[in-house]
Amino acid sequence: MRALVIHGGAGAVPVRMPEAERTAYEESLGRVVDAGFAILTGGGTSLDAVVTAVAMLEDDPLFNAGRGAALTRDRTAELDAAVMDGRDQNAGAVTCVTRIKNPVLLARRVMEESSHVLLAGAGAEEFALEQGMGLMPNRYFRTGRRLAHVESMQHGEDVPDLMPASQGTVGAVALDTAGDLAAATSTGGLTNRLPGRVGDTPVIGAGTYAKNGVCGVSATGEGESFMRTVAAHHIAAAVEYRAMPLREAVTELVHEILPGIGGRGGIIAVGADGTIATDFNTPGMFRAERDASGRRTVAIGP
Ligand code: ASP
View 1 (cartoon, rainbow, N blue to C red):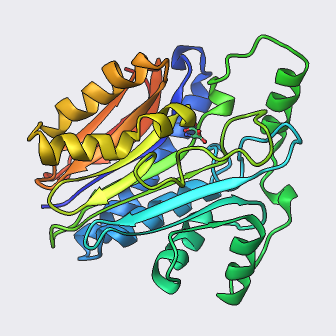
View 2: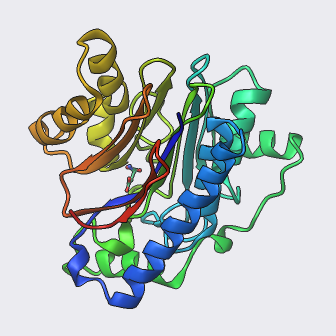
C-alpha cells in the first residue's frame, strides 16, 4: 500500500487564471507527484518521497516556497519548513531562514543531525554551514511577480490577500510500503507580513504532523488560524482518540473549526490505510495525488 498527496497552496479563484498559467501549475504538480511516487514504487521511504517532492516545489518559482517565496513588508524572503517522520514522531523545522535554497532539506538535517526540533534564523543558517550546505543570496528567492504583489499591497491596491500570486505554500504527505507515514511543508509565508512573523508551517502539530498508525497532515492557508486550532494535530487526534474516519476529521477541521475563528485554507492528509483526504474552504487548492492503485489526480479548483 502506498500513497502520495502534494499541495501547492490554497487560495483564490482559479477561473481568473490564464490558461497558460493554469497549465504550468498542473504540469509542475503532475511532474512532482510522479517523481515522489516513483520513490515509493522503487521501495523508497515516505520520508524520502515527501522531502524530494517539497524540494522540487521549492525550486519552482511558481510556488510560494524557496525560490518564488512571498515577501515580507521589507520585501525580503523569510522561509519556513518542517518535516515529520511518522515512525518515531521525530521532527525537524526551520523558520525565518533567508539564505537556504531548500529549507526542507535543512529541516531534515535538524531532525536527523541535531537533538532539536526547530531552529530559527541565523542559528539555523550557522547549522546549515556546519552541515556543509551552501548559502544563497536573498535575491535568489525574490521574483518579479512576488515583488509586484507586495508593492501593490503596500500601495493599497485591492488585491485579495490569498490571490494566486500570494499563495503557493507547498506540502507533501506519503505512506510507503512499510506502512510508514511522513509529512513535509515549506513556505515563504504571507505577503506583506511583519518581518519575523512565524506561521504554522514550521510549527509541528499546526501545519505539519505525522504519526504511524494514525495519519500524516500538511496544511496551507492563513497560518495564524492553523496555529490557534493546532490544526494538523487536531485531525490526528480526531482519528486516534475519536475513531473518526480521516476524511471526516479533515472536513470538520476545514469547514467547522477553522471557519469558527475566521480561518481560511486547506489540508492534505494520508491515513494509515492509504486513504487520501484533501479539503479546503477557499475557492481552490493546488494539489495532486497518486493513490494506492496508482491513480493520478491533478486539480486546482473545487
Ligand atoms: N500557511 C502559510 C503561512 O501562514 C501560508 C500559506 O499556506 O499560504 O505562513
